[in-house]
Length: 314
Image (tube, rainbow, N blue to C red; front, side, top):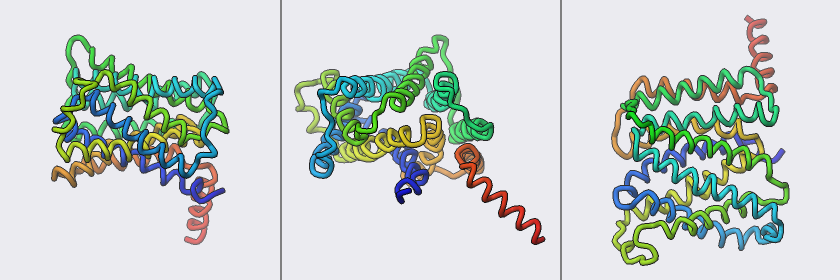
């Protein structure tokens, strides 16, 4: 086992950290730009950032576009994870409260784990589902402890958009695991995913094709766009895709529950918000759920063996 694989669960923590950072960056970016503009620029820059690096370091793994299966896989990834999810998410967020949005999107791991059981007959130990419930409960607690409120209007339009977004992310996650081939390099596939997503969204950017308005974007907003292009997208989304391949969809999506806690910590640093006991308690519940659900049987046997030795020594 390589060092990367040995420490992969810890490296995977970069995902909730970088995704939480996108909430902070997004506050600055969306103060000047429309959601569709910020998403288009984010993905376009991410693809342009990754492709030159891959040409220099992994050119021999460049995909063969004559493979119809590869092109079909890439198209589905672009339409689900790139365009569909983000359009539905922002449409939903415009019609409901952030807390509603956070709790509905947090249902995504539930949909994914349930689909694994019924569609792929993927069985997991009961502690995985107990940990799953704990992690969701902790994430919900964190969202509410940060001052969020549940607010529903009579149409539930925003909630339906967000529910569709959560389901679509589950479709992407399961599809990415089911159809992936060993010779399809994850880095190249995601680089083209980001580039194509940005290109397809560009015609919907207000004022396109004229770019004269972009010169008035502030340095702070450009910094936010560049951050989102590199960290939550090029690093976070790509790492998530690799995690789906290596560990499975159900394992990968549970890390999403850590996003609210990391977002709260980043808000403390940038906006001087308070750290509360409910926030710390909710984070502890999320971590307990993740450890319980994702701990290997070998690790549990080691812990139980060490406990039994300690008891005998006493």
